[in-house]
Length: 349
Image (cartoon, rainbow, N blue to C red):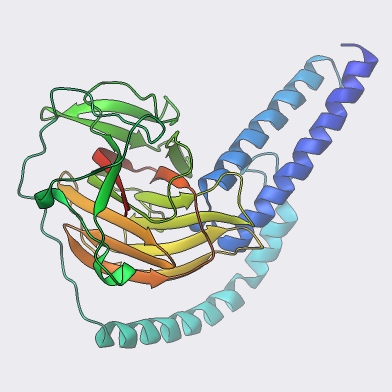
């Protein structure tokens, strides 16, 4: 390797490390469990480039030191020692704080109506004979038959007809409108049902599959049949539907996440973003989704309102006016395997 090439690679390494530091600061601000796919994927990709450059330089006999954040295993010994010295003190304080938090949550829990476990869908999901993979750019929105219409009822303040602008049951076997990594996303057959399966294993924080569409209308609903095959790690969502998703961010906002945590048997509506649009938990609800069962989920963003329905029952509602537009993003949490089918996107006239 020429001297100029070595210099260039060293400068590139410094640039990637600065980029990594920014990503890590963003993740620290909102927490790993609620990090957006853009942050998680950015950290992973930047670390891959850092390792590639270090290997290239070392193959040219250039001495390169390992940075403390170059991978997620390099924890400085001095920090470990310091942490051990403070462990007893922190543990005592944590127990007291935990008791206070549990008490507050329990009191709030008693005051709220209990939703109980959700009943799995009783109807069988059948794939259609022809492909139903239609993008907004190629389709003319049409009013659904009366028996299939959904409405915006309490959210919009008035009843409006639902317009179908996208649908996919994956029976075509093609993924032209999805950009999920082929290592973690694939079409599978489940009891004669075609489904889009995401599997985030091997310590991955999340596995994302954006919908390759122009920006969707500001007001829309996403309806999907979902089946959890494998519950992920604790404190991580098994799956998330992100509506009004923006990558890169718009004014610091990533989108509204409609997430389900199997380890907590709870569903959440949250806003994801960076420093200018920080993470905020907007609503939560009890929800028990049994593995290997199909459920119907619908997420809506209408004006400043967000609403989550499971099996046609409203379980969570929120209000936030930070994000005006964006597309749809599916993601699967660490160590989870989840299947999606019969995805339909509606807007309202």
